[in-house]
Length: 193
View 1 (cartoon, rainbow, N blue to C red):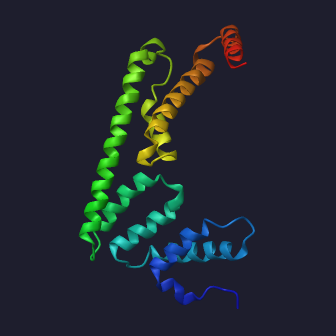
View 2: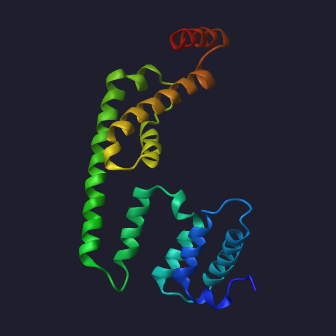
View 3: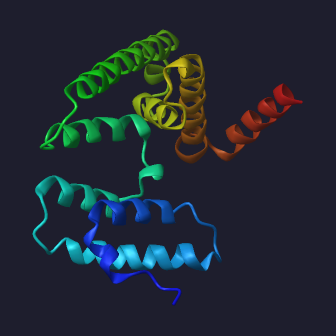
């Protein structure tokens, strides 16, 4: 009859998967929109029922924010913790996931050290006391857009660019007078053109 079978709501893992998949639809795709409505309604109702604690945690997590909107490496850490509490666990897979996570985290730490040295060598934090010192935030934002280990150079360059953009934004919003900003804009225009 074109509706989802109500008995599907008993398959909680299937409902979560359908809920996640519904976010990949385009506006106007009525079946996908109905899938989202159906799964959202039933998953929210499940929260009040007695579910195995891990499954309840997964449902709550899915309803908070869709999987593909999350930062993959941070989501991996969350999933490792949840997977570890399951009754049936592939211990080799779990150990591999932890090892992989820790190795990649080591890459991130080295990249952040390198960017921090650059920030300190340029003394931007000391010279521009009015500017926000948001280097770690810039790195995390960049890590969210390129999390793969092979993207280290891109993360370093992009973090520097984002930190400089923050400083320029603060110059315009907090520090500079209109006359100084006109001169600064003129210099930037000449450099770009």
